[in-house]
Image (cartoon, rainbow, N blue to C red; front, top):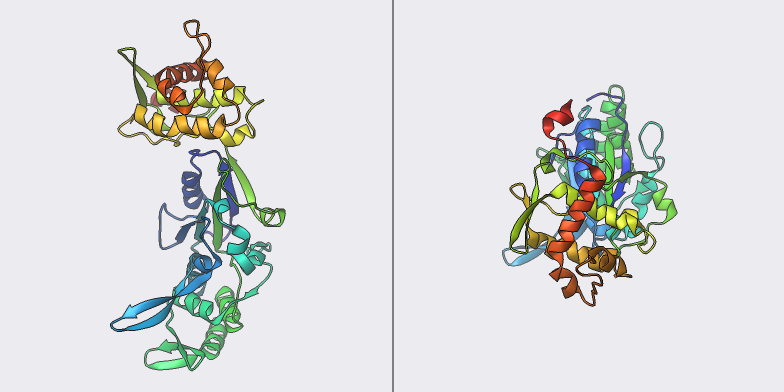
Length: 377
């Protein structure tokens, strides 16, 4: 891997289904040189309301062995990836490592990061500007993540090498001196461990996602936000490029005893056009639009049942929650000049009509979906 790769610390945010997680995989592959879903260089986690600092750093849990109960320390997601990155530096590798956090704002990020928050400030060399102390148990978990064999003997941490046990401080001092001349990064790692401190190294990146339409979220304060780069992943509007995997996807509608086949990408364009055209009554329309993967097709087809179960409820409960009049106006026709939606069941009953109209709206505003040969020209 090239030496000039800079660590990335970025939050990708946008509407549901816009492909934020897939974009992370592209960044990992194209900018960090990490193959897709490579578990030897990547650790993934999802924040949620019950996720804690202990899940992030590590926790002591009981383990039954026969008739007795012992306690074992389980390294958290951050300690695991940090240990992998440290070991990469010690081995002299040029590899990069990645921590992926999905749904960052669904957990209390400030509480989850705890003192690690200070490490998010980086210097020009990619290392954290500061160092933070860790507990003995966190140190043991970190050493295990580095594939070492730490044990606690009479309150002292020792490293097992064959049949020999070496106090952790002496082991780190020896390894620091061995690496000092030829591997300054590796020597720096052991210097940190000797002091029971950690620092995010230049070969470790952190990528996170935020679903901006999720209202059951924790607030991210400005101090936390400014320590990240931000990238908005836009929803499909206007003349957006249609992913190859969706160009042939159809929505089959049985309406008034006749089967109508609509191209699914037009439906997505139409939904977002409808949302944008009602920006006066919808707060934060960028958050309310839907992405390509809001509904995942199977066998190049989206079932109408999927639309009813997921899309219609999302529009009713999240997008037009405050005012249903735009939906009534959109569904009104010369034959039905005054559609009234007094309840969700009324909206569901008009699913076929609604989808035909939004698909037509999307086609009118986007134009022709070109085939692969035309797009490649």
